[in-house]
Amino acid sequence: MFRNISDYYFLIGVVVLLFFSCNNVKNINNADQKPDTTSGTKTTKKLPNIVIIVADDLGWNDVGFHGSDIKTSNIDNIVKKSAEFNRFYAYHSCTPTRVGLMTGKFPGRLGLNHVLYPQRKGGVPESEVTLAEYLDNYGYNRRACIGKWHLGHSSIKYHPLNQGFTYFYGCYGGLVDYFTHKNANELDWHKNFETCNDQGYATDLITKEAVKFINDTEKNEPFFLYVPYNAPHSPLQAPEEYLNMYDFDKTKPIYSDINVLPSDKLLPYQIGQGNTKRQTYAAMVTAMDIGIGKIYKTLEEKKLLDNTFFLFVSDNGGTPYYGGSNLPFDGKKGTSKEGGVRVPAFLHYPEKVESYKKVESVISYVDIYATIKDLVSGIKENEDGISFLPTLNSNSSEIHDQRFLYISKTSVIQKNIKLNEGKLFDLSNDIKEKNNIIEKNKEQFILMSDTLNKFNTIIDKKITIDDSHKVSEEWKMIVE
Ligand SMILES: [Ca+2]
Image (cartoon, rainbow, N blue to C red; front, side):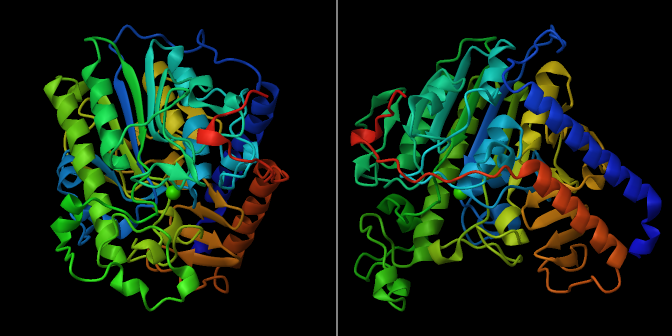
């Protein structure tokens, strides 16, 4: 069949690749420039509020609207009035997806296709025009990041308030204790630049701050609210009120399913553990779902919902060891198989999405920046991303389906065809990526392999990972 895909698709592929290559040159040349607000059409139309909610390590099979056993009634109800993305791809781990979301670029371009662990130096360079900085130029005076930052903590220059946000609440690192708010033995909970001693379950605190931020909005004042929950990422911890929704039995041992594991794999956390890992994980997801419901309801009560771009997405697939499930896909967080990179996502935006719609086009985390750029300035492309607004009003988007979407160093996708680790798969009839179709599709394989190699040459910036950072007391960021 792929012999029939023919020169037309090949040409499209080359054109798309050239577009990315040329754009890369442009980006390097313009790296230090601020956004060009003069080229964007400043519209007299009322700007939409932008709310982006990111779940952390939430698997494909961990939301009710995908048929999960986990209770997510709030987001399930929102999805019924949204565009649901059936092919939304993230990077396979935390920091890189956030880099792509915040810069519109593949994280490898910035040498950031790795996770910023506590001891790791680096972050998004100051020269990047983050989404928050971009929106600053279009009249968004209030820009909050409430949740888990994970885009650099070794220097104050990486702080969210130095990357375009006007308000920050939450943690800098990626593995905070949900109750003590400690990570690497130090308190990692902050309000703007200051240490914050708020007590409570992290998910609930994040929700409360997000709701407060919306309630503090003056009428006709567009805002950007970025809510990267750290849930349901490990450590597995949930308050009893949420565990009880899953028949938590205090008289039974905690984590009874972990006893079969070697003792060196036991988790050090005790507070908030349920009877099983899956039960605890489910309670964490439900806590987040209830939080999202509160954020949504606040927008509704403030009569802001109609004019709000409300996007929900997970930053990568789930980790079965920590209770997540990516069924029916194979793979997990950290892999480029569908289970690691294809994530739950939807957009609620009554202005553009009048009723439920399932979007089948291939959409990516780097498209979020491009879409918001399109929304506020009419410019439809940004570095590696392509606006997905056109997909909301049509059954398919040729530009999304025909492009080669770079997934990772080992993987590239074009519509249903996926190259991963030297094998070729047709996702239209093989979602588990079991049947290598190279033999009958050698031309396609060569094309995809060449494309991946070109991407890796262009995008994968070689960097030396520096693990010499010592987390300071209360994660205070240093001035370099
Ligand atoms: Ca993650």
